[in-house]
Structure formats: C-alpha cells, structure tokens
Image (cartoon, rainbow, N blue to C red; front, top):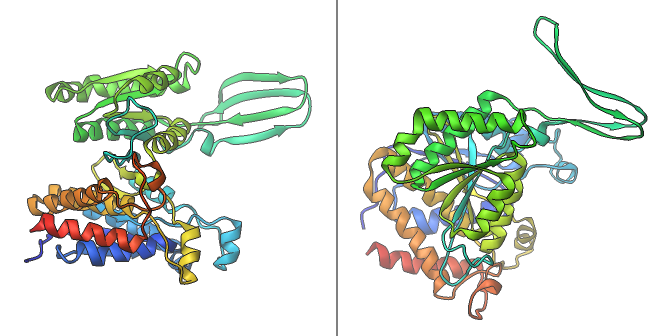
Length: 403
C-alpha cells in the first residue's frame, strides 16, 4: 500500500537501555511500513549527553519549540552508580527537567485502559489524567538541619536591599529541621493555561486542588490564578462544549476521586502530582500502561512513556536472554505524537493510522496476548508472551485494520 505522507517532521528524542531497543523496533515494525516517517533526530542516550555536555538535550527542546511536536524515548537520569558505570564527567541533569524548563511545560499522565484489566478502584471506568506542576515547592526547597535552640525567620529583601518582610517561623527550644519552599506567578500561570487548554483538548472536566485553608498565601495564590484565568479566558469555552472547572481542597479531591467514574483531568501541585500519578497508574494496572505528554502554554507537545528505561530487562537482553517487556506506553507515545502532528497539519490519514495502531495494541491485550507485567492483572488466567511475540501480534492486527 502507499505510505502515508508527512509534511512536517516530528522531533525524535532517542533514549537509553531497553526502551532504546524497543524504540527502534516500534519504528521499523509498526510505523515505517505504513508511514513515510519524517523526524528531526536527537540522540538523548547518556553517551551522547556526555559527549555534547548535554547540549543535545537543549537542542532537542529548542527543536520541539520550532516544530511543535516531539516524541521521546525513556532516558537515564544518572546517579552516582551511573556516573561510574558510564564513566561520566558529571552527574547530568534529568533530560525531562531540562525539557520542562525550556518549554515551560506541564506534564499530563493518563492510564491506558483495556477491557480485561480493571482498576482496583471499581468506580473507575474511564481514564483519569493527572497534571503535575513540576516546578518549585519542596523539589527546589532550601533545607537546614537545626542543631540547637534558636530562632528561624522568614525574610524578604527587595532588589534595592531593603528588608520588606520579616516574620518568625519558629523559636526552636531543641534541635529540628527547617525548610524554605518557593514558587512564582509566571510558572503558576503557565501551568494553569496548559491545564485549561488540555482540558479543552480532552473535552473533560478540570479539577484543581490545593490546601488554601491552611496555606493562606502559598496555596491560595495557585487557587486565585486558576480562578482568574477561568473567569477571564476559559469559562465561555468550557461552557460551550459542556465541561466544567472546579477548585477543591486536596483532601476533598482525593475523597471525590474515589467516588467518580473517571474521565477527568486533575491538576495538582508538584508533590501532590508526583504522588497521585503513581497512585492512579498503580490502581489502573501498571506504569507500563501510562502515557505522558509535556504541554507548553503556547501549544508545543512532547510525548513519552511514563516509565523508565527498564534497566533489569536491558541487562538480560545484553546476555542474549529474551524479555517480556511491555512496549505499549512507548507505542502510545508515538501514536500520540503522530496524531497531534496530523491534527496540526490537517493530515486525516495520519490521525487515522495513529488510532488504528492504538486499537491494534488494545485488541491484542483484550485477546489475551500480553506481557508479563500485566498478565497477572488480567480478569482471566493468561500466559505472558515475549516482547517480540506481542509486537508480532500487534502487527497482524494492524495489517488487518489498515486493509
């Protein structure tokens, strides 16, 4: 059959370890036979980040800013052990953190739902998307181990050197710990814009939750910015398509989530989003069945799997052993990017192909053919298959759908 044409390339960000092996196989077996694939390629493997002193990550982020859509393979964020293993000159930063910072993006994570693997929360029949404000808060906090009695103060000095705020945090009568967190309006506005725009894309209700009753300045600022943007810019658009925005206290949101059927976008502050995205992914089955997309306020998209590089399977692969690694989230990273590229370029065939590839993956699992991570979660007993066998089964179903 004639291959589907692309007019604008995707920005392709290659990665590390087992997901790098899957990456190439997905392209060769499931995409290139049907699509005249055009990509702007960047190798974000750890060796290339070392070789370029991480400039390749910056270049990739700027390319996504230029072309509008990127697709990323999982990458290693090095720790001390990885520095030794890969003989690195530096413990390079997380590529995802660099991409988020340059694109000023918000991360949205959504579980992939199949009919024969049900959430442990019986009410959840539709996916729940978590939006995490991945900036500031405790992740950028300044901390101090208080060694003795003394006074801790919060002080703000303006650019002219004048102290404009000073308040006692606590008079320590013994040793303890101290933490100073921050955030900034510009980042919160970007987060809120991205959440409202993504809710419109999904045509789903948007929740935002914090704890403004306790944090009357910090969390309340988040609440106020969301309310301002909704009332001034998004309310008419939301009402036009029949979706709603609401603010909830974080504890009320957690309780409400247990009662709802899903099908919502839940926006969370940094720590809440970090924790709740793992809770939602686990409840729906597996982190290997969780998609992730970074969305910037000006409409740039970067798609990837929510999981890591599957290090243990990679070491087995190097020994020549076959593995039962789940490629679905990585396949859905490609389909998400191809679909968005098709939308932006008005290429209906490309959108339809992405939909069919997703359908082929889901029907394979629903036919009882699945990898080892999700086989124990299936409603009926099934035997896990190797990755190659799973992808061959997907290819058979995709061929049938494309015909």
